[in-house]
Length: 380
Ligand SMILES: Cc1cc2nc3c(=O)[nH]c(=O)nc-3n(C[C@H](O)[C@H](O)[C@H](O)COP(=O)(O)OP(=O)(O)OC[C@H]3O[C@@H](n4cnc5c(N)ncnc54)[C@H](O)[C@@H]3O)c2cc1C
Image 1: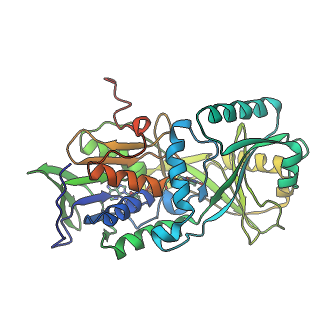
Image 2: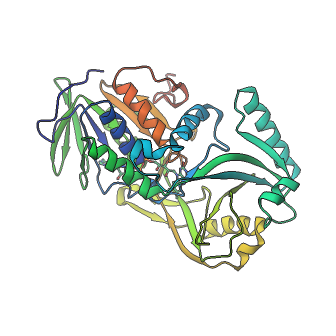
Image 3: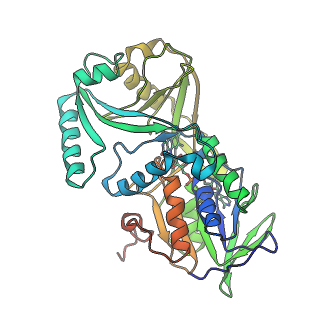
């Protein structure tokens, strides 16, 4: 991929233009400026206003698809020293992550997963029995039989993290234009010409980090990549006495659960409301939220006493296999990094590095085979 190594004379030309100021667009921009390339980020709303700013902040390797784990592990290592990358700890706290088993079938499936992980060389997950579970989570119900457990996974503050990536990229020279929706792109004389209501921009490289809107943008540059928009939901409760230090999920049910130091509890786990990406709008599914709350109450009876203070949803892009799309598009100079299917926050520090390597025409040190943009095409 040809890269124009030049300083930006004007703020409308650059070595690369990133479409989308979510955490993936900001991370790509940061890694590009770290490599001394000039970058423009175009964001239709404001940086971090969609999934990247409103998610649960889970920095989780537990339960990931096997093919995503090398990327998640690389990202996890970067999370351990975020100040080195973005000059801010992003509110990241290391903890432990548990997925609780409430029957033998779930426990057996957890054992099979750990055996397969070990066979593939990953040793971060283990199965713990009911006694260790009770020691780690004294408040869980007596019917909980054990758990899949990872020591060292944790959580961060999502909006703060996304802003930290933006700030660091800006300090190093990236130019962000918010309220700048990309409407049209055309390629002429080895450059992509990008049309927005705030003016036109040009670069040899375009990075599609448009989140749930990434499938639409891919179509504009000739790539047909299936993507559905859904709206993962979260609720936050009133403060409760401290009862859960680890982050908790459930095997066999959608649940992700964490208690903050102020006692409030964040509950979600992938249950979705309706997303209307063209209107920037979501609609909560109250019955779905009630199901997640019931799972939380079943594991932690103390939750039954908690009042829900707030509920919200974010717009997220899901691919058919729930793995992200990361790699080159069909046209010259196009790179895609979208479709993170509700688990992209944790991956962002590493994905930006991979995208920057692709821009530089290097072979990334991680296999991107499972994330290939053309994996859904009928000719494959
Ligand atoms: C409620 C919820 C909880 C979640 N919990 C977790 C979790 O605990 N852990 C985890 O790892 N992941 C989690 N996720 C998933 C994670 O938030 C996403 O995978 C990640 O934020 C995706 O980042 P992104 O940059 O690809 O997308 P986004 O944050 O959506 O950013 C894309 C940006 O592109 C912009 N854009 C789109 N089209 C255009 C255009 N034409 N012109 C200009 N700009 C455009 C959009 O406005 C948007 O700001 C959760 C998601 C949600 C919604």
